[in-house]
Length: 321
Image (cartoon, rainbow, N blue to C red; front, top):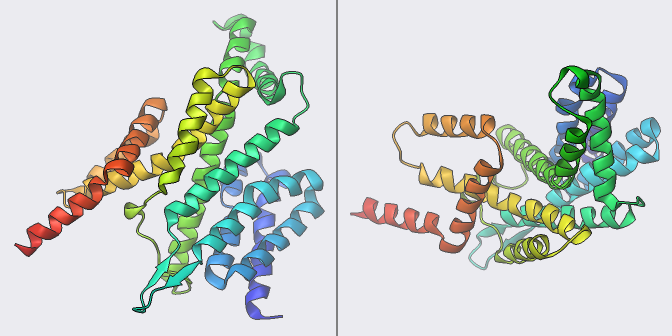
């Protein structure tokens, strides 16, 4: 067996082990371990090729199914293996121009495909869930149960009532799937960027690292965002629930584009590193709908005005003078 496939298989075993580790270890490591379970798959694929990435995904699936059964296998396949395979395949696509220059598949287009994959997966789950209230009812029930277990024992000594818990569960049930999609997209993006950075530093990356401050999204991505927003605004019941979830999902790429715009705007500023540090610190601790929406709106403005390119052109003109 070629060395690349052996390394790919080992990466898959490592990924599967990271995925199942919280099931046999302390729950305190759940978020950290699961968050980076995809990293070995991306390291194998982006460093050794698409076939090694597929072998890695297969190795991970074997570990998971042997440890957790079909339920864990489905989760690992949908949340980790398939997205990693998509990232690797698309990221390694290249086109050589007649003059010898090479154009690699844009990172923003990979992000758009992942968003579409997440949206389709959500709709499939929504259709498959067999519950009196549909997926929204199931999420509401699960949130209510969780809140009751956390707050319930202290209800007599707290300012919360059972009705408050019911209302809180109903409110968050409409947001929870969208937030899950947003956090999942962020997880894949972080792992992909980290894998590419590690491979580039080691001199093993198969493609040049994209400049994330120059991230660009395909124009067509606005269409599902507008459609989902309309469904949320004018629909009712399950239609509005789906529209709200998909609106949050399709807003996420523009949030990333907004971050890229912030980096472009701050280029050339005195103390730029400190400014960006403070910006991300505020974003981290003041994270909420207002801050996310503000950055996403900046991304939308950049998408349709292209102010980053104009700023870069103006800077080049100044240098020529």
